[in-house]
Length: 246
Ligand code: UDP
Image (cartoon, rainbow, N blue to C red; front, side):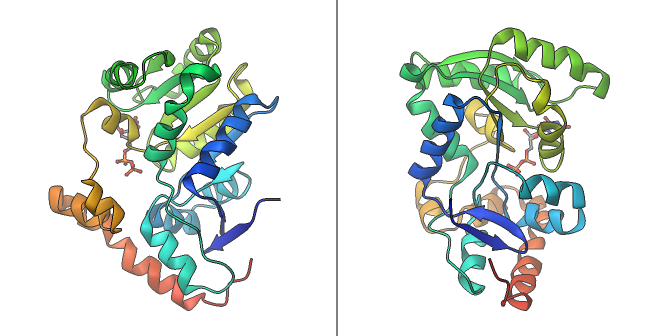
């Protein structure tokens, strides 16, 4: 059984990036459907207020920390320190590196019209031989969901990336995963399709490695400050809940 480390009640799998990628490949080969989520402090704080989101994260197949803040939180609280940050974008890239020989078939769902398609085009250039069997944007009406599910089923995709932002993507995954015929793993990927398409940029490696990607994003997009105000609140909560047990 995988070691779990709770941060404000959200159970994280204590895995390295490589271990997380291995788990995803095991999921693709298994008969059941699996869910993968990558909460950052903002999503954990959201889950504290949103019972539905909290329950979805608790029953997920794999939960990894997308954000250095979550790893820091695991150091503050007692009961185990998370091995490393496993950003959703990097996890997906790691699966794509091995995709060609493994029969992975991706479907990209989410982001503004045209972005998922462009992301597919870019990934096909980066990873020759990769199979991206369908795309759909993330601005659809609830009544269109049925047609999207049909399209995913027809495509025979076995990995579905869902980029609708939190908590929309987590809820969509939970409500629709049982309707998918071939998909074995659904991953909530936030803004990753924007990065794959080149619409948004990751911070330079130096910022990523020093745990300052959040700072880079703030400099580039100062309006993120309101979203980021949740980070100090998150750390205060964690300190107040220091005794939290596994
Ligand atoms: N999005 C979408 N449908 C919606 C709302 C959002 O497809 O109804 C997309 C949005 O275009 C973006 C992604 O969801 O590509 C969320 O990005 P965000 O930066 O919020 O995610 P983060 O990585 O910060 O969690």
